[in-house]
Image (cartoon, rainbow, N blue to C red; front, side, top):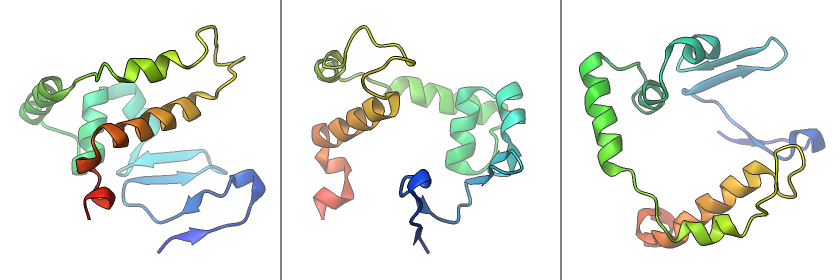
Length: 125
């Protein structure tokens, strides 16, 4: 069940229960699939964390090799994205950005939905 909380500092973010992450900001706790973020940051590769988030456990060596190869075989940069990236100010730094990095990221994710509408169940029906 999703709850909506009115809290201006919380920026109208949806609260929900999650099997993927656990956050207790007051106590400084962040876990993904039960594993503390400190442990993942110190010992896990990015591909291992992807696997953990998708499948619920860290991969074996064979699983990681297959998964990493699959990622490399299927990663592609759509050249049409360059036009959108170029629209952002080239002289931005994160501290003086006219556009927040998360706004840039969410814009590019929205652009992808326009490039591949068939991948979005809401558009397909």
